[in-house]
Length: 341
Image 1 (spheres, one colour):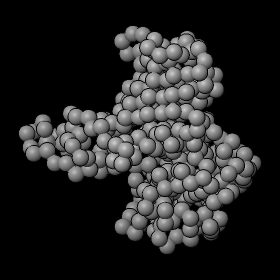
Image 2 (cartoon, helix red, strand yellow):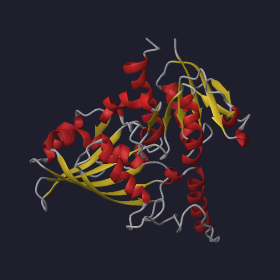
Image 3 (cartoon, rainbow, N blue to C red):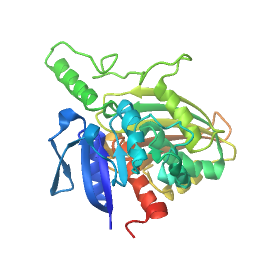
C-alpha cells in the first residue's frame, strides 16, 4: 500500500522536478495530485514517462486523506495553505523559507540531520533548507564530525533558476538582446544578469547582509551546529542551473587535504572529483540533472591554523529542492510511517 501525495506548485520549475524525482525514485504512491493556483487549473504535467496529471486548484482542494504534501509554491502561498493541509492530517514538506526557523518545525537534510525528523509531529510540517545551504551542509557534515568546524567563509555562485522561470527567461532574453544589439530589459534582477554577476540575492537587511546570506548563517546553525560561525557573500551568476560555492573552513583539529578527501569520498550524497589537472573538477554544467553534491579543489589553507578550501557544486533544482524533499518523504516512510512496508 502506497501514499496519496499532493505536489503543490506543480507547474513551477521545482514542482515539475519533484514529480520527475518521485517517479524516478519509485516512491510508493497510490495516487499523485498536482496542485497549483486557479490560473493553472486544467494544465497538464508529467508524472513519470507515461502518466499525465491534470492540475487541480489548490484553493479548493481538500487535503483530508492526503498523506504527504510536497510544497513548492513560494512563501506567501505556503504560509496560507501549509497549515491548512497539516491540520487536515497531511504531512507537509515545504520548500519555501516560511517555516525554516520555526523552532517547532524540523529543518532537514537527510544525510545530515535525519534524526531531527522526529519533531515533525509538533506541527505536521517539515522544512527544506535554502538550496545554497543544503548543498554546503551535505559536504560539511562529515568534516565537522571528524575535525569540528569552527568557522566558515563562503562565496556562492548561484544560478538564475534559484529565482524561478522568469529569472531564467530574463537571462536568455538579455543574452539574445546583446547579441543582436537590442536594448537590454531588466525586471527580475536589479542589474543586468547576462555577461555579469550580481552580489545581491533577496533583500538587504539592516546590518548590510542580504537575506540569502542570513539564511545560510541561521540555517547552517540549526541544521549542523549552533556553535559554527559563518559569513557568506551570495552572488547571482549568468548560469541557468547549478549553484557553486567556494568554501573556506577553520577547524578545531588538524586537517589535511588527504584526510578530508578520504572522508568526503565515504560520505552519503557526496561525490569527490578532485584532480589537480585540466578538467579535474566539477562545474554547474556537469552537475545539472545530477543528484550528487560534488566536491572539488580540496586543498589546505596555510594562512590559518587547520584551514581547508573546497569547491562545492550541485543542481539547485535537484538536491537543492526536489530531491531533498523526496528524500525526506522516503525517510518518513522508513522511520515513522512505514505505510509501504
